[in-house]
Image 1: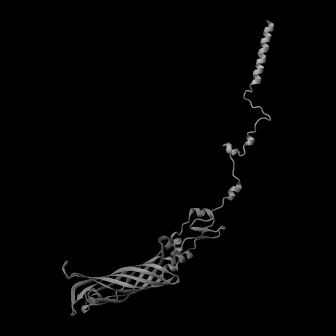
Image 2: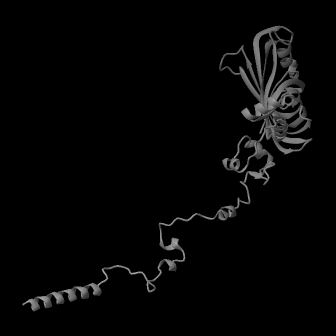
Image 3: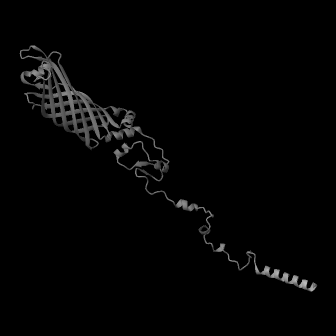
Length: 327
């Protein structure tokens, strides 16, 4: 019985040893036969998403700045000067504007030279608006000299002159010569008590309205930036509207309208008010885009003699006006 028990214990022990040798309990045993998996990884970042690498500083230095700066501005590499690429008038249109990207590329701080800027934009006007008052020293020829006697000698007569507005558009500009085309018109008023042929005074009041319309070509000569001399000539037409107080409203002859074609010429001596103060000229330009403000001494010639009645209005007269040049 004892021998049988011993034999069973011995067999049980041998069985346990065999089981222990048959299994490795999922353990990795180090040694020369184990594969070096990490050694085969040529680039750890290709297989391991948790590894972070930093770029070489040399790669950052290789990223060159764009070879061409933004379109509106050209910067030198040493940041000494800044120049505008677009046309001169475009520069003035965009005056005071700088692209945000350009400010980041340059450490240059621009100091505005108001004097040079003012002298620059004075040369680049695209047009001008003229406003003038011309006295009425023109001659009126009519039957029995009735018009001239009424508005020049009649009781409470008014020979009021005319206000003219004209727009000029430059189509050729040079340093010493500018050319332009113009279109304008005006309105004038005259009145007086009528005079009979024998010289007696009438109780009727005659009112005479004149509405001229001009189209012409002009030449302008700048004299430094203080003065200009300009001349404009071309065809013209005028409307002559007559009203008399001794007729009832709607009665034939109370109102009469006549039209005549003719010619005109205008000469101007312009004094540039803004040319005497560059700071004032600069401020006026930045606020209103007016490049020049000029005071004009004017002479006007006109000739109209093709009315339905035998009337001729002609002669030369003088006046005063202003010119506003704009960009």
